[in-house]
Image 1 (cartoon, each protein chain N blue to C red):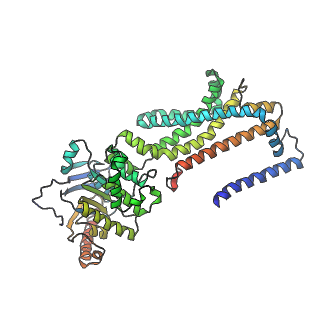
Image 2 (image 1 turned 180 degrees about the vertical axis):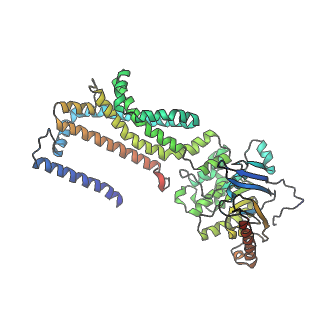
Image 3 (image 1 turned 180 degrees about the horizontal axis):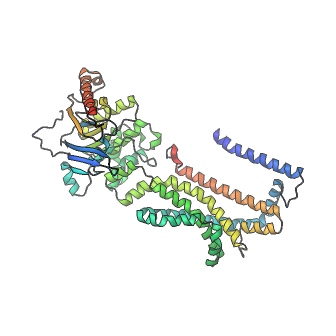
Amino acid sequence: MLDRPSSQTVLPPLLAMEKVRKTFATGLLALDGITLTLPGEPQVLAVLGPSGCGKSTMLRIAANLDAPSSGTIDWPAFNQARERGYGLNVGYVFQEPTLMPWATVFDNVRLPLRIKGLSASKVLDRVMDMLGRVGIQDFARSYPRELSGGMRMRASVARALVTEPRLLLMDEPFAALDEITRAKLERDLLGLWLSSRFTIVFVTHSVFEAVFLASRVIVMTPRPGRIAADLKIEAPYPRTEEHRMSASYIAQCREVSEALARAMSEAPS
Amino acid sequence: MRLGFDIVAPIAVGVLFAGLWQAAVQWYELPPYLLPSPLLIAETLVTDFPTLLPSWLFTLKITVLAFLAAAIGGLGLSLLLTSSRSLERSLFPYAVILQVTPIVAIAPLIIIWAKDTTLALLICAWIVAFFPVVSNTITGLNSADPNLRDLFALYGASKWQTMLWLRLPSALPYYLAGLRISGGLALIGAVVAEFVAGTGGTESGLAYRILESAYRLRIPRVFAALALISITGLAIFAALSFISNRLLRHWRESSKP
C-alpha cells in the first residue's frame, strides 16, 4: 500500500501551510510564501534544499516552535486533541542527538511521557518496547556518552516516537553520521515507518537520501526559501540496499538533482 | 600513569623547593626571626599545635559556615535572579558591586554593625565567597541546550518541569565550578576579615595568631599558621574537586566549563 494523496481522502490533513512567510528580527527573509499540505495518510516527505534555505525554519514552524510572520498554518488532524489541552503530538529529531548527558537512555526516552505526568513504572514496558524497536534495548541503563553516534541518534528517534505521534519531523538527523551508519539508520527508519504508519517530514541536503527515503520530495530554492518543485517518488516499500543500485533509483536521483539545479539557478543574486 | 605523575611531580617540586630553602637558611645562617627553615616550621607546627588547634578550628568553622551559606544562598539567589529577566537586570549589578568592593574596606563597617564578631567574620567571608557561585550558576541555568529547550516546549513542559529536569541539571557543572572557587575564597575571606577585626576576644582564628606571633617576633609560628591555612585551602579544593568529579562522571568530556 503506497501512499498517494487522493481526492477522496477521508482523513483530515496533518498540516496545512498557506503562504507562510518568515522574517527574522534581523530583517532576514527566511521563508517566502510556503504553501504545503500534508495529507492525513502516512507518507515520507523529504524537504530538499541548500544550506540556509529555511528548511529548518519551516520545520520549526510546522512543530509550532516558531510562528510565521505572515500566512497561516493549521493542524486539522490534531485540532481535537489540542482543544482537549494536549499539545501537538508531534515527534521532533534534531541534527544532533540532543540527549540529556546526565540521564540514562531510558530516562531520555521517557522524557516526553514524564512531562505528560506518567511515572517511570507506568511507562516501563512502553519505553523498553520502543528501545527494542530502534535496536538499543540493551543500552537502557547506559549514559549517552557511552554510546556511539549512531546509537545516540537511535535513542533520539526512540524519544521522538515514544508518544506514538502521527507526525515525525526530522531536521537533517543523519547528516553528522558516517556513510555506513547512515545507510543502516535510513533502512531502519523506513522499517519503523512501515510498521507504525506515521508521516515523516525529513529535511536533508542530500539528493540520494531524499530519494531513497521519500515517497514525495519538495525542492526548495536558496534563501528566501520557496518551494520550487513537488515531486513524487514511485518505488515500493520496503526499500532494500539493492534499491540503491537500481536503474529506477538512479533515474529518480537524476530527476531530483535536475530540479534542485533549476531551483538553485532561480536564486536572486 | 598520568595520575601518578600529577601527584608525584608537584610533590617533587615541593621537596626540591623546601630543600633549597633549608640549604639557603643554613648556608647564610639566617636567624629564625628573618626566615625560619622548613624543618623549624615543621617542628613549631608540632610543638605549638595545642595553641594553634583552637584557632585553626575557629577559622575552619567560619570558613565552612560561610561556604555553606554561599553554596545554598548563592543557588537560591541564582534561582531568584533567573526567574525573571527584569529581576536579574536590576539586581545583578549590586552583586557585582559587592564583589568588586575590597572586603578589607568594608570589613570594619560590618564589624561595627554586627554585634557579634563571629557573625561579622561570617558575613565578610560570605560576601567574598558567594559571588562565583551566583555568577556561575546564572550562566549555567541559562546554558541549557536550546534544542532541549525546544523539546521541552514542544511537549508542553511547565516552567517547573523545565527548571527541575533541564535547567538545574544543565547548571550543575557550572555550579560545582563556582563552589570550587568559592571554597578557597571563603577561607581567604575568613582570614582577611579577622586581620581587620584584630583582637578576636575569647575566640580567635589563625589570622589573629599570625598577628600576635608577628608582634612577638615568633616568626616560626607565623609560618606554621600560614602552613595550616595553605593546607586547609588545598584540602578544601581537593574535597570539592573530588565531589565535583563524582557528580559529573556521566557528563561528556566537556564537563568542566
